[in-house]
Each structure stands twice: as structure tokens, then as C-alpha cells.
Amino acid sequence: MTTTTKKKTRKTPAKSKANISIVPTVEAGKVTNAELVARRDASVARGVASAASIYASRAENSELWDVEGNRYVDFAGGIAVLNTGHRHPKVIAAAKAQEDHYTHTSFQVVPYEPYVALAEKLNALAPGDHAKKSLLVTTGAEAVENAVKIARAATGRPGVIAFTGGYHGRTLLTLGMTGKVSPYKKDVGPFPSDIFRAPFPSLRDGITVEDALTGLQNLFLTDAQPERVAAIIIEPVLGEGGYTPVPFEMMQALREICDTHGILLIADEIQAGFGRTGTWFAVEHSGVVPDLITVAKSMAGGYPIAGVIGRAEVMDAVIPGGLGGTYGGNPVACAAALAAIDAIEEEGLLARSTALGEHFRARFSEIGARVAPFRMWDIRGLGAMLAVEFVTDFETATPDADLTKAVVAHALKRGLILLACGMHGNALRIMVPLTASDAIIDEGIAIFEEALVAAIAEQNA
Ligand SMILES: Cc1ncc(COP(=O)(O)O)c(C=O)c1O
Image (cartoon, rainbow, N blue to C red; front, side, top):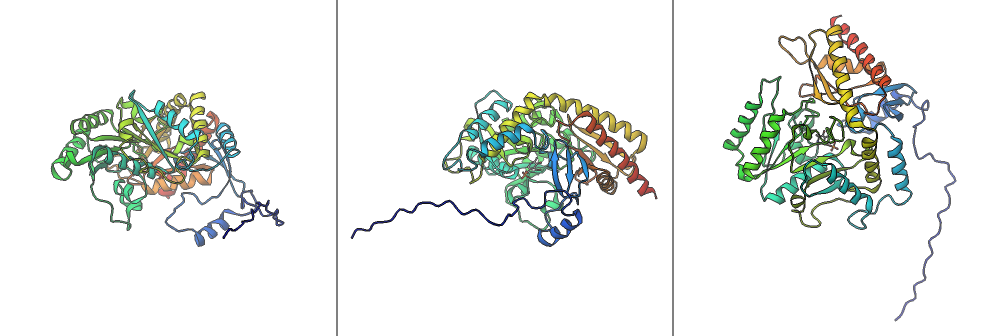
């Protein structure tokens, strides 16, 4: 029996009669922040906390306007994502141009050039003159998970060593590596096995580099057989953990320890990379070449993309099909990343980061001495990845999370978006776009000072 199938022609869908806005409530004045807080409380899981109670309407470079039309200077940059600022014209143009061609094919089905071009660029930028390859995924946690998979496949070993106060993400494997209980790990364990924790050198806890290295050697004696350890992962500058740089001698010692035991060194550059510290990657300051680097955030100026860059032979340890994901290396995000990297190069943002870091450091120490004597215990960081830590007094150096929270709240009321960090929640970190003008930087610093004065006055009242 033969059947004839009638070929259906695809009809153009009729235009919708209703003029439905596809972008809800972005225009200022249509809804209040309070209304959105109420709607959010009723509809969004409370586990997704937001630092600010304002709702974004639009943003440009280092400024943001809320739905009520209020303007803010943005020192948070969407958690260190916006080294090139909100809506960098090059990034937006590249993303729009890509959207006019295709937005998704899945690299695992029909590959595309922007993915390859970005991998080439990342391989060229990463430290070390060995052959490199890259993998693109969507989020930082996914990059870290894949770095562990790659390290395990390459070494045939299960173990991973991470550090106190480190932050590597909120998925279950990365939570096992994240070294802070509340809020990240609270109530959601158990976590995967074969993850070990070594001490991070900490001025606050009196842990020197020597102590930290002794702790690591003790870990090898007590729990983590070195021949069963695939990787040591470390943030060259602790991000969520308080913007504390790893002392260079510690990073160099880790390299040696890894080489001695055949362990791979992973630098988690997700928060510190792409110019935040004045170099492409923060690890460059120490002269150490890691085996694998995880990247995300400011790589694409606001588009969700992440990756792992590594030694070619290590990256190729996983069999075809073992890496990837439907959206991994989305072409629009790849185009945005290529443009953001171009902007960092063309606009000299690495040098700008170093200069901004010096400016913030000088201004903060002057403000601290003048309006908050003995309350700013530490001003630390690398380049423009900088934090100030608040204490109740210098003698006990007791962390003052309440003062920190109050500064953030007073700053927001006065038009500055700030974000805290640190094991004790008592550090304020600077993640301002490196593209911000000097005038906006100084405007933000002036608001910070006013907020600090108000928060201290409130405490003393
Ligand atoms: C150092 C570091 N690693 C991993 C992550 C996780 O990235 P994501 O939030 O994109 O999953 C972050 C996020 O803040 C980070 O700072």
C-alpha cells in the first residue's frame, strides 16, 4: 500500500491582536519598589536573597536607575560581573549582531565560530606558554564542577582540596568545596565525599603562610592521601570569603606541592579574573602557572557564560560527550565575551584597575582615619579588587557585621549600591566597573563616607 502524504506548508502565524508588552514593568514610574517587594515575597523562593530592596529599571556603565526613577552609583557590578560596565556599547552591539544570525544551535549539535574564537582567545590570554584548550559552560559553579571532572579524568584520582573561606558555587559538588556554612551550606547537605579542607592563611585568625602549609601537610598525613588527590583548588583572591589575596609565596608553595605529588592546581578566577586585579588573571601576580583556570562573571560583561581553560592534554582527558550542556557556550554570550575582552584590551582597563585600586586604598585609609578611627581594621586586595573590613575596635578586632550592614543600608538610601563579604560579613568589597569615570568613583566614595558617618552615629546613639 502506498500512501501519499500531503506536504504541509508552514504558515506565518497571525499577528497577535493584543498589544502585550514582552518586557514587564521596566519603565520607571509604573510600579514602586515596595509593590515589587510584596510581589516577590509572594512568588519567589526566599532562599534567593537580594541585597537591595530596589528594583532595576535601567543601567548604564556604572549607574543604575530603579523603577521609581532613583539613580544609584553601582559599586557592586552585579557581583563582579561588570568590569566593562552595564551595557558596554561594544558588548551590546556584538550581542545584537549575533542575535540577528542565530541565538542557539547547541554547540554539541551544530557548532559555531564564536565558541571556537572565544576558546582561542582564552587560551591565548591564560598564563603559561604550554598548549591550552578551553571548555565553555554557563555558570561559575558549572565551570568549577567541570574543572573537577577534568582533573579526575586526567589524574585517575578522586580527591579535591579546597580552602577555608573559599567560595566555589552553590551546586552540591561546589558547595562541598565552598568553605563557609551559613548561608550557603546550611541545611542542604550531605555533600560529596573526597573533598578536603586546608587552612587559608589569615591575618584575622593568626594563620601565617607557614601555618597554612603545615595544615596542608597535616591533611596529607591525616585524611587526604596525596597520591589520591586530583586537584587543589584556590581562589587567588578570596571573593565571597573577604577579598583576601593569597600571599604569593603560598601560591608558589602550592605549585611546588602539586608538582611533587602529581596534583593539578586549579585557580578559581571566577570573581578575580578579567582585569579586576590589574592583570587578566589574579594568579599572574604570583608568577604561578596553574594547570586549570575557571572563569565566568566579567568575561562577558553581563551575559551568562563561564569556562575552564587548561593544559591541552589535561583538558582532553575527558572522552567526547563527557563535557558540555545544552546551553554551554551560548553564541550570544560568546559574542558578548569576545567584545568585552576587546574592550578591556582597547580601553586599557588592566592599568585602570591598578590605578583605581590605589585611589580607593588612599581614600579609604584617609576616610577611616578621619571619620571612623579604629573601626576600619584592614584595607586589602589586589588592584581594584579591594575590601575594607570593619571591627568594633582595633584591640580585639571583633568583626562588626552590624556596622557593615548599616553602611550598606545608609549607602543605598543615599544612592550607592554596595555589597558585603567575608567569613564574618564585616567587609565591604569594591566591584565598581573599571569603565566608571573619575567623577562617578569620587561621587560613590563621598556617599560611602556619608553612609559610614551615619552608621557610626546610629551605633553611638
Ligand atoms: C570564586 C567563585 N567561584 C565560583 C562562583 C560560582 O559562580 P556562579 O555564581 O556563576 O555559579 C563564584 C560566584 O560568586 C565565585 O566568586
